[in-house]
Length: 220
Image (cartoon, rainbow, N blue to C red; front, side, top):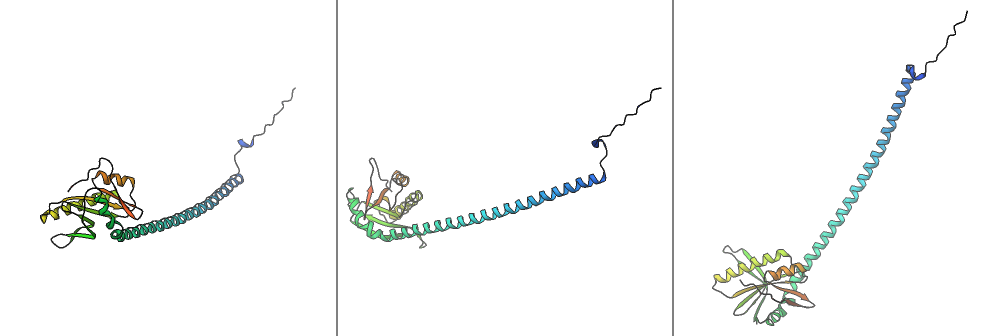
């Protein structure tokens, strides 16, 4: 009679249920990993905050420096404008009538220092920096350190006020305009000439008049 042999099999660990100790160890490991992750995030968050604070401070410093530069440049331009305005009587007036006379105007009267035109209530409607006159023509000159495009429209309105004022006192002389500048940009010069205004530009210790070919001065 043959004996029946019994085979003994071993159940793999992965088929067995996890013990409490194993589960607890996994939870502890997960918690430690989570804490490590939190510490890492906190550390990096602090670095991010520090970098943001540093960048904000640097941006603030750059803003302050830029503001100082802008203020300084504005002051310098303001001073330049004031000095140029103060020099108008000495720099522009003595020679400008000669320059215009070379163009055939023959101005015999120059009125520097500003001419104010008032309304009925006594308020200033406009002010003209320099006025040249003869029996037929009045030339109103606006003086700027650095003329801008907007100064052209402003001077045209000034010339219209001057025209209406002169017509009101039965002065029917032709009115023309010019803009004088210590520094004249190319675009500003072109726009001034296209508006029919003379361009007066500083040249050394005197002024020169820009009269390109085909230029026709506008009359008011």
